[in-house]
Every structure is written in C-alpha cells, then in structure tokens.
Length: 229
Image (cartoon, rainbow, N blue to C red; front, top):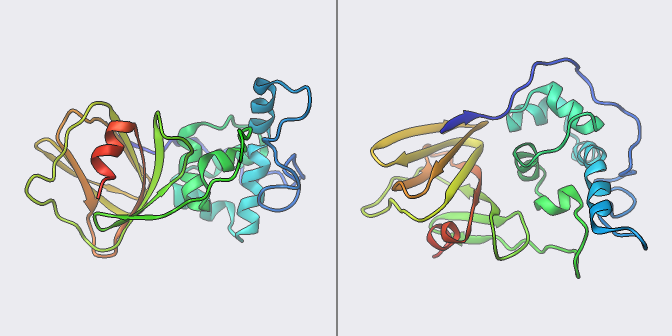
C-alpha cells in the first residue's frame, strides 16, 4: 500500500506564540518525561504527551526553521503542523516519526517519555551495506524506528530481494527511494510512505545519484535481515 503523508485542509497559517510546558530551549527547562513523587506511570505519560507541542515548537525555533519549511520537508500540511505545535492536534506515531528524523532526535526524546534508569540515548551511526543507519528508538525487542542515509544510486544485486515475517513501513525524507515488491517496481518521492507485508520479496535503495534519506519501522526479523553487515 502506497500512501502520501497525512494531509489536512489548511485552517491556519501560524502556530501559537505563547509559551508552553516545554519552557525555553529545544528540550524545555525541565524533563517533561520525568516522574514526580506520587505520579503514576500513566499520569507521567499523559504529562509527556501534553508537552509534545511546545517541545516541537521550541526545537523548530532553536534550529531557525519556519513552519512552512518544516511542513514542506516532512510532507505535512501547514495546518496540521501548526495545530500539533499548539497542542490542538493529538500527536501520533505517523506524524512524529518524520519530525524526529528532521530534528535529529530519537523518538522517545522527542516525546519526552518517562525515563527508566538512565534516560539518555546514545545514537551510534552504523555503516551497513553502503548506508548510514541511525536508531531512533530505545530497546531491543518489538518494532523499532531507524533513519537511513544513502549516498549515491543503488541497484539490486542478485539475491537482493529478501523475505521475512512481519510488516515494514518506510517514509522518504529527502530524495527518491526505489522499492521492489515481488514483480512490482516503484519509486517513492520525498513525503511519500509505503507499508507492505514482508513475506513478499522486497528491496529498497536510492533511485538517484544524489542519494536518499528515509525512515523505517520494522520488528526483530526485519532488523536481522536488513541491518546485518
């Protein structure tokens, strides 16, 4: 299934300039995910989600980006991004993953999830099969998020198509991504996403010499197949 990033009719042009729970700076003046004494895990999560809008706004301003620029980069409507930053739009995984890639943060740091033990995530880029892979989520089990940076054009080699249990989701940030699914070939442009059953033989790589950047979601089997050297 090939789908564009979620769109919404524009109803506003600017996000609220009022200060939010995040305070100043990209991560605010306090850890939004930190648990206060007597606060349940569920309450801590709700507090973190309530601060996502202010956190996104502060990140954008710290990096000197405009609403229009970020919305264009992630393929999101200006209205959706404005409402997300002002807290009027509920954050979802499909909206936050592209933003995490643009701002260069792991997803749980962007959201401000309650820390368990050491809350820091040390991203270690890995060179795998001609691409740089950066983990955007914490943990070794379940579905994980990754950012892929590919320099130069790629073509599938003999035996390149893989199969494994599960589903994969990819979202193109920059450039064009070649995707082969069984006997079908297609190209995804920046702002487009694809989700597919990985029991179908598949391969993806850069469609252009200028390279491609994209986000991916897959489970343990997908990691074993695609992220091994």
